[in-house]
Image 1 (cartoon, rainbow, N blue to C red):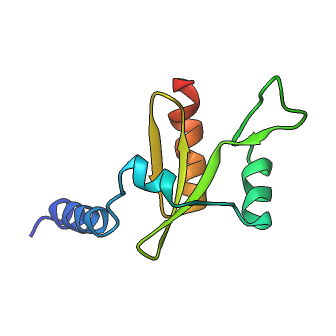
Image 2 (cartoon, rainbow, N blue to C red; image 1 turned 90 degrees about the vertical axis):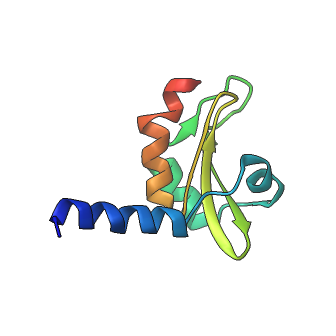
Length: 100
């Protein structure tokens, strides 16, 4: 079998296994970030600088759905979620920040 096709099968299988819940479900099951997670988010500058807030606001939040933890970043136009904090931070910088 072609190595590229085998790689794609593995990627697709992992994607299906970790399929993201709908935004409304994620929002309904929202929980606070741990202090360590919040520090990572702030250190990597995945933040919203709101004029009415004295300090930056985390652009990443956490949700637990069916026992799985999801890290989410969103604007009013789009959202992205992964099961890793660093993955969500990267998606914030690569895509979500540009939709604000």
